[in-house]
Length: 252
Image (cartoon, rainbow, N blue to C red; front, top):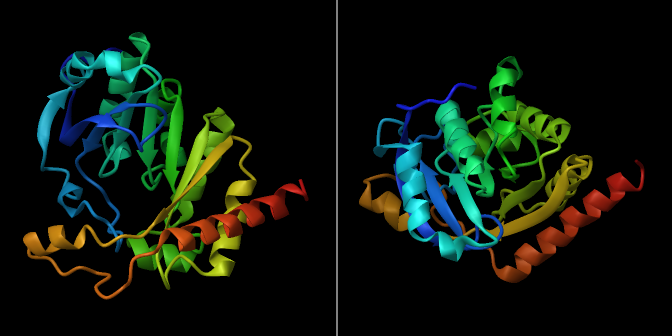
């Protein structure tokens, strides 16, 4: 891939000392634009690609360098929004980061992956150290209802990561009455248990902190009235997913 000296990405914001988006302390970059409309999304202000601030990879890396002493054992995480919507810029950012010895982590839903763009994605894979893959729902119909998009491309992306041997940590938000059913959780375990590159599982309890942002933006909150998931419920959900993983792996 030729070096792009003028590529600019649409960036929503950055976080200097992130501790929940990959290993260690990280410089977290929130990309603008997302094709999903997850009912529990707490960043609806990242949906439109035209928003945000235009920035070059060098500008972002300069921000990283200001606090690089704090990022030992950490690195850079691209999140969003959906970073893969800006695939060329994301690849350029990670390529330049790797030249500086910076650990690169991608937080994505994988929804924009297409096998027909395999060569483009391979260039990204070559400079990606870790992927946090957000699995929204285990069932096709449930996925489409929750996100507004079909599930197929997410599963294709997961398989592509496995073939590329990129370590993957699965993330899953458990929402009462929507993604916390035992059969749904077992199925998720069956799906991810087949991935030979699976390195971790993060089960995140649904919260309503994003509701205020919807109100401020004059938007109706899609999950109005749905209670938050407590920590005990999230732990139980994780145990069920792990059981699904075990069921699959005993048959491999």
